[in-house]
Image (cartoon, rainbow, N blue to C red; front, side):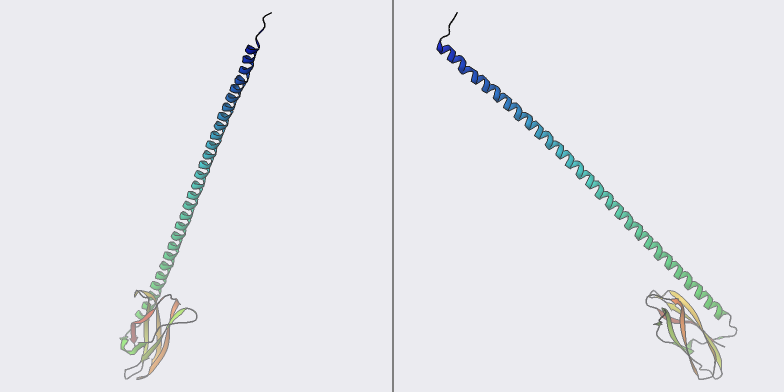
Length: 201
């Protein structure tokens, strides 16, 4: 039987802790590397999720903006169409009124121009929204006459918006008659009135 000297045994015993310490250090490094890898992976996943969420939010915001612009465009188009429709109706009503007034005057036979006998006051707006203008007719002739006066209402652009006819029954020489010309419908904006045709007969 071979006996080891106490010194050799002591050397072997001293080597064992060094080996264990080396192994422990390796395991620690591997664990740290694994933790770092997991941390990097988690960070990448979170970044990807945040990026996706941002893209979705941006897409939703863009869709909302497009929808708002579309609604605004549709509203503007509807408003323009409505305004155009109202303008067309007003123009048609004005043309119809003017045609009716002209027809009434044209039916008078043997009439004489009496524009100098007619005076108009200022246009006022009645409680029902219609425009009114005072009419004064003075017979400057030496005999009695009847009068028919066509009066047109115009807007600020001098376009005819309505027309009416005022009839004055037999008026003695030198006398003055007063009447009121009223528009056929409510008129908006500044309105003026003028004598288009005046006949005595």
